[in-house]
Amino acid sequence: MPFTAKPKTFNASISVVEIGTGDKTLSIGGMNTLPLNFFDSPAKNAPAVGVEITDTGYELTAFPVMAAYYEGANTAGARAKRAAEMPGANFVCLRFEGADPAGLNRSIEDCVADAKDVINAIDMPLVIAGSKNIEKDAELFSALAEVCQGRNVLFLSAREENYKGIGASCALAYGHKVGAESAVDINLAKQLNVLLTQLGVPAQNIVMNVGSAAAGYGYEYVSSTLDHVKSAALEQNDAMLQMPIMTPVSAETWSVKESIMAESDMPEWGSQEERAISMETVTASACLASGSDAVILRHPTSVKTIAAMIAALQ
Image 1 (cartoon, rainbow, N blue to C red):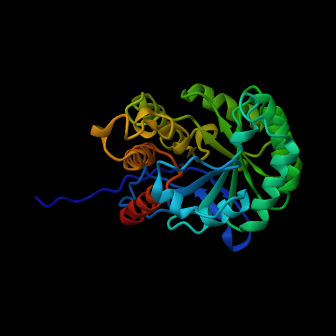
Image 2 (cartoon, rainbow, N blue to C red):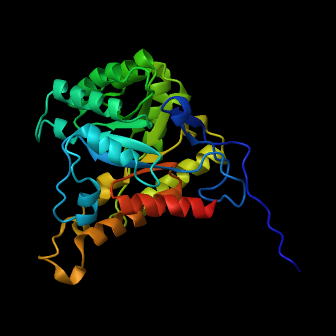
């Protein structure tokens, strides 16, 4: 008996969130099938790949390929321009790592200057990520929202502790998009989406960040949560879980031992740069297969590899 494929599509779909402006506008979400099941229905918007840069730059001594790519890019604007030109990139993510009060504690004024530099350097959709300090990020995002007026930026992220300030200053005052960041828990993710919408932020202006972990570091729980979120969104038509999911993969994978252990200390593990790329690509592909609609990566090889994988599956 011949096999007859039966496409599995849902009446519900993931909502579409647009970031950026003009012909560079990027649409995220819109799928009504299980993740990467493009054989059931063509992708309305294929999963997107973003390139992470920071306000302070990276220490690249152990990563010659990435060092060569960013050679001579000594400002945030110059790094953003290289990131925007990276093969496979759909958007740029500027992370204000140096704003962390427990680290360099860069001033709001200095961060605003960097944001202006990036905005003037690129016309690609921009995502702005904070320092992960709740109080500093609320203050920082409020200042950056005004600077980025008219660019339709996505701010990552608003959390339960600071969603009111970030939602009001970024989404309500200037019409930017907001990332709702929760712990890896479907109920907490839904609760934050409800709170943001009750604040007045339209559901179409919210992207979810339900957390992540590097492959091998408790990723199974992340995968299970992503699976439950997508199931509720598509099978149960839960509007408060239909926001597209963006996962900052690089923030997790570049801090695990496989990526930070020097080759001189662990020669049997091989190239440190190849290990970092492997951790990033494996984790990103797992996130996309589990339900992420966009991932944020760091290494040019990782970006190219994941973009090629998405294209090959369409």
